[in-house]
Image (tube, rainbow, N blue to C red; front, side):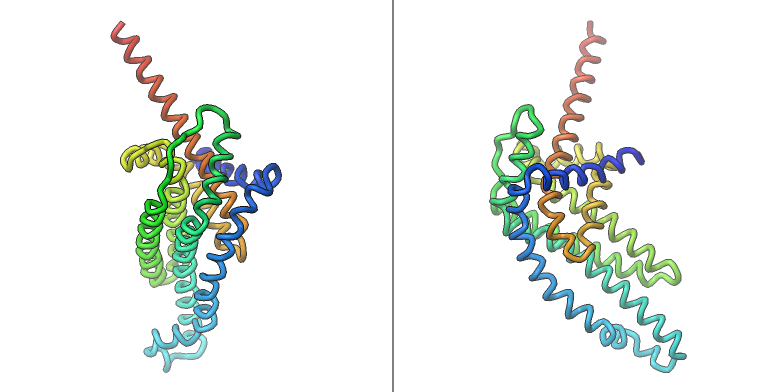
Length: 259
């Protein structure tokens, strides 16, 4: 499991490797990523600047406390609020960027498919399908952010639990969303995707967590997004190839048994 999780991290690293071999191709993905970043920064920066007032408004009962305890409570609450906002913003960023930059990211994942060799999937991913998946991602992201916020109120360990849960859950959602185009092109329905993602759960989680962590670095999301699209294509290919091999092995075994 640890090896598979590390392989997920490695898949994103391989995606970053395309900046060296295909810089112009990946540069196409910077424009929509930068637009989404500016939009979200316009919301997150005011939130960060007003956290003091927000936490004070949420904890009027602490006004009469000793200054040290009052400030510690409000700082901890501010950190949890910002973590929840960061988790949600990463998912909103992905949904918005993939929708805005659909033509650019189509070129990236198709070129990655060609570079991997073998039969190239010829299916198309519809724009409205992308919009629908994006809205679904935002809704699920809101639920993850809410859970992160609730966990943050657990005494002593709340901040750590909120951070870990937020990164793991949002990473899983990111990986699922980013592999959507490669799966669409293969004509895989919802159930088939779930089976593939479930079979490679640790690798999928490793890739998603690595992506989410990069998104949480200032300006990291802009540079990471094209690499994440490339890496998710590699991930989808690895999952489908492994399923094909396992399926072939099963059928061979069945044939031998019948013989």
